[in-house]
Image 1 (tube, helix red, strand yellow):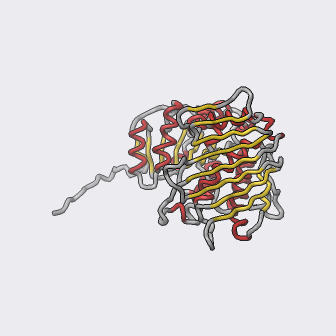
Image 2: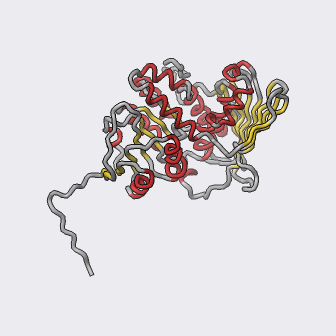
Image 3: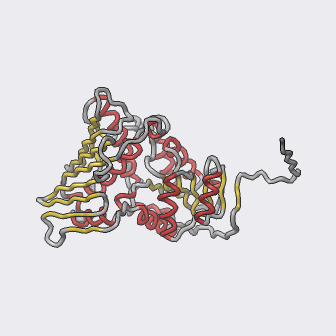
Length: 376
């Protein structure tokens, strides 16, 4: 049996599917999403819904996932061509949640199109991607935000406050972060150095950013030690030792060989004869603090608060890009984002060379600045 399909000459072959008509105002913080995978469906879109924001359009390579999510979350359009998002003058913020190897390229394209950018971590998985990113950021004067959500958790915010708030950078501290990450199948794209970058680049960067937030300083040098006789750059059982500019240190243990019954994330901070212990972003316990003993509640890793603040920044800074830049610094400065990215590249270099590696020069040529200035 066979079916014969006859199309008229007027058939519409547009890659954009309009699910519902809606009017969007220019400079109102309208969002377009590139990527329709698990993170988008389970974390990002529910967070945006909680904030009360509905994207205009979502792009997915296959089309089906994007359309399913569009129907579920009330998004007006779905497409298989992300360029429709970049070409749409109404879109203010481009959200990128694709596989890791496309993050740097899509961020540059979105900046060139005049969009603010929220890109899931990591910002880049190859050193050579850094300078083009920095160059385009400086030219565009648009916001670039990476999804380091944990610093926006109410538990992390409370820790920062107890440690001195903005003055925490004046007080050196020791931090120990243990991540019981769990195993990921060997065939997963996350383990592919050219596609996922490896789990250290793709996930451990979260905790470098968290330590940077708590110390109020930037990473100066890093040493990486991984499990096994001949560990590779895609190892997912390793320890990072970080030295910070203000004298703080951090040890980040990222392990995939632990038991699932043990808590997934534990953060310990030691400072001025005081100790803070955060278990799984559910319970924070303090030792040596006069007016604080504990804080507990439902698990909150900061996804909703992160998106809430970002939307506020985009909307309030639309008419003045310079003010938009200033407001962006209150979230995560671009200099810190680059420092965290360089730290992960330096960690892999450390693994290859079995030594501490200075962070600032990684990914930079001799004719380029070795650090990014917040006010650049």
